[in-house]
Image 1 (cartoon, rainbow, N blue to C red):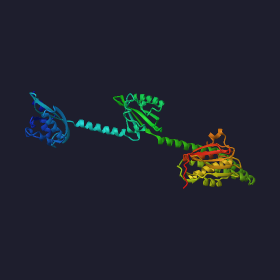
Image 2: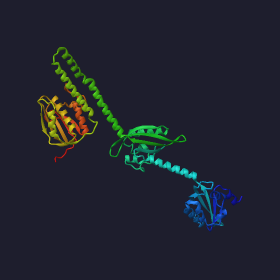
Image 3: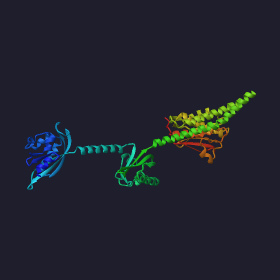
Image 4: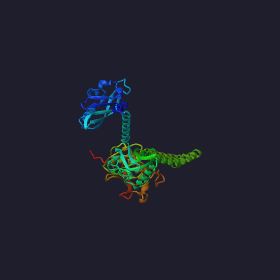
Length: 465
């Protein structure tokens, strides 16, 4: 079988060019897909092929000329062919043209161009590129930490979000065992847990986990994550680790816990503390009805006052923490004097030794001071003296009463703590809650006169104008 017979039987279009750059041969397949007369092409300059090449002819021409100059023996060029509508192939299609030099007696005698349809390959490459773009889009998710590991748990890549969390670079972690990377180096326990999670995932299991990562600045970031396997033909070939910063969720859960605690306190008082004055009021009212002695109504009135105080304290305790402080500039000494006038203090007295102007929520600060003044009047004795003064980065409220024993000071702010029969046990807890709302630190010590001294620190001072 001669070469012409082979070329004629080929499924790919073939064009032969002589050493002068003229078309010397066109096979039947090229004639079919271009719907041209072979005799029309043979003898024409190579440039006539430009009419069938929509894009890429310049590269094809350069490769052909290089072959004829003996500069390149074999080269592949990708072009887009344009076919007539009457041709039995798509009007446009990607084609790879292999340009091969032909030699006779060690001299260049021409070049052969073999046209190969690469539509399927081009489709696959486009699909692969789309998959790559989708992969990059997923990997670059800004709110998710993503790392890809090999089946042995070594880092293959990680997204920018994960790298920024611990201020590291991809080059510094690629190839390293994942537990040894900066994301986990702050905790040996977490490293041990991670090794177990990786082993389980390598066996095909999806492993969910909760962990806390520590940034270079020392901030703790709670993360909800998963280690999941990637399989090929049933074999785990890689692992994907994903994590999300759940700081907001954790903060919400903690706030919900605090709200539930407040509700539990409320329920406890409603079921127990309010029952006592309610029983007193009910019993005395019944006695007044039976005996007609109106003195019993005094006891009813006292019981109702007691209930009102309890309810006010409970509502205050429940509301605190639900909203941010509405802060402004407050003259501490002036406000303390006005608060004293609204609290039943009997024969007690007050000394205001503060000229501070502080940033605070006036309404809540008033509530804080009133609770401290009421606490001093109830526990410090009938003629107790209360002092409001300034201290370093804050202020204090002290009295010259009996004070709070050192062994009891840690419990002083606990809800329900009281040493007075008529106390609700919520006054100091309200004080602490209001201080927390402002971002202040509160503590109880012994005052200059031996009584209780409540100090508030981290209070923003405002210079007098």
